[in-house]
Image (tube, rainbow, N blue to C red; front, side):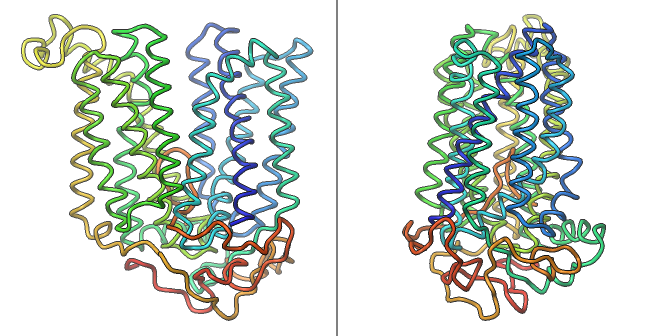
Length: 507
């Protein structure tokens, strides 16, 4: 686990730097233009290119050296961030500069996310994948929680250019770490070899892997249904709270929710998730739905803060368990395509819910619970009437939708039939050369000189997960030590070398 820990620590620093930059740029665009439309445009541009590019990105990740992809992405991050910093220092920064660099970085992130997800599976022993994914969730949660508070202070202290140059430094740190740490080449599998060929065919294989595995297909549908609710909550929590409380009260709610996000990630990292993986997905969706319903009952800051904490905590357990399922159901040399395809499906639903949230709340639900609305004399007697209560009704209905989704998840053989998570590793599989990530490319340009799907849960939290083992599993490793034979350098990992292994659930 030593190599993974080094990669994780540098990723935590880089994610925090990028989150600070995202926050600072959003504030600058709004203060400079006074336009919420242009502010919203920065979020859309950060999202859509990655969705569109995901299928191609997944195929490229499985063709190319993962470490090279991460290095190029960080190098471009340094270039774009430094350019914005210099433009600001010269007094020439314009919103369109930010829009262009946002598109570039979003496109590259479509490559980096599945690459990093698959790297986690390669570096962590299989029985530790759940904890490794939990740690990646901790990095995401900490960066998202710290960015608003720290970003505001830094904007006042060192200015936008200072924040941008600080972000450059975090990128540079990650580049140095990636140069020092060797990342194994994924072991070849029969399925990966059979899918080798044209880029179009390899992209299509990502869809086939997803559609051909009942567990992954069910998980994609389950996660997409949850993302529909998550998207509405992300957009509407701010106006709903502000409708009955102050902006400072909103800050309290978001902070408490952030604490739930961090604690959920830490819990997943230390626990690895429930032994029965259906309990980590459909099981934790039950309290998630109940917390949504709780937050809709009364216009109370305390009630909504409790609901936000529980909602974020449960979402991280579901996310970590889902990534563990993908990490164990898909052969390593197919995981770039698997993660990218899964991410595209679920993020498309999430983005659609972002677009629908405002119109649905403003034109349908808010009028229903206005003082003289159609439901004021019935539902209004329970939830109240006036500004924000229509959104509260929508939250309650979304909570019921999540509960229904959990019930369907338990009733669906694809999720219910998942076997227990791996708790004991097996010996090495003969024929796996391990690799270092710096291998020579074969005639087709692959890093492994031979043969070549996306899953996840929620917005960019994709890696792999599994249960316990000591952190010193690979203690002989140093960042640049050669890998031992076996699964991606770990003799105690289960691998897919030679004949393709039968996944945990039926294909």
